[in-house]
Length: 160
Image 1 (cartoon, helix red, strand yellow):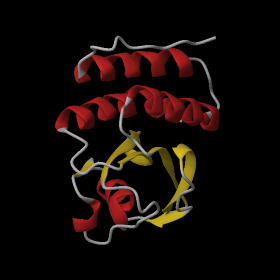
Image 2 (tube, rainbow, N blue to C red; image 1 turned 60 degrees about the vertical axis):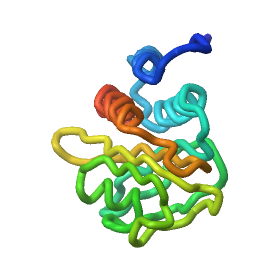
Image 3 (cartoon, rainbow, N blue to C red; image 1 turned 45 degrees about the vertical axis):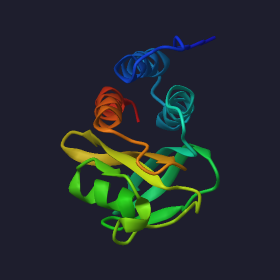
């Protein structure tokens, strides 16, 4: 049984350090990518406050396909280069969007989402997935959040 908890006064840097450590412990030695993504989505949901969606989109046959997540039902397929997730996957660069309504070509899967953080997961030089976090608060995500989720993506890239 896993029981991961943070002290109530944990700073964001500590939160992400503990998230990465928990992810490592939870996925270490498990070869099933879907099981790992499911547990990771749940961990992110538990560790990162003020989210309304947390999960994965996988690169499959030149497009993004919905993977395990926590939140409301979501878009199933996203073309590479479209929306925040598709842009992150196509460019291989983290997308931190304070107001999704100002992002050109934003794809609204959940009308409640106001800000978004999408981090590519890169394995052997190729984007294999993206980690997508949505929040109902504008400006919810910072550089600390981006750095923390980038650290998570690097740690789990060979496990999904």
